[in-house]
Amino acid sequence: MKDTQVSFRSNTDLVKKAREVFGAHGMDMSSALNQFLSRSVEENALPFSCFDEGGEKVFAELKAEMEAVYQSYKNGNYVSASEVERKWGV
Image 1: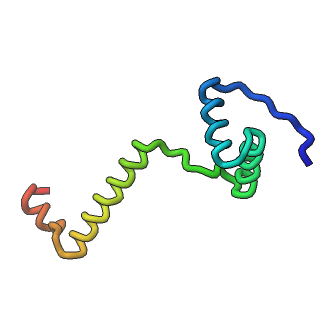
Image 2 (image 1 turned 90 degrees about the vertical axis):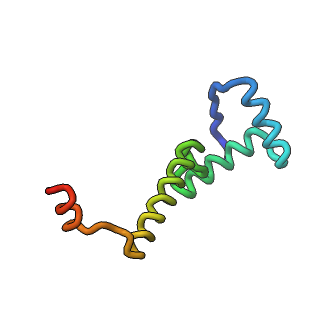
């Protein structure tokens, strides 16, 4: 039952573009926002990623680098602690 009206402020151009996007999917603003609310409650989270693209790219690069280092270690490409102690006098 839809018995509550919600009001909020937004950028005029953003709202116009959002209406175009929603309209292309056969939805009006109210339907789209109700869908967003329903999915948020169902998932108990936001139904989309909040990471910025730059952060996701850095994370993916770091993950790939860590995987490469791990594979190198598994292949025996590493220096033992005793070798480091000998070389650096630690």
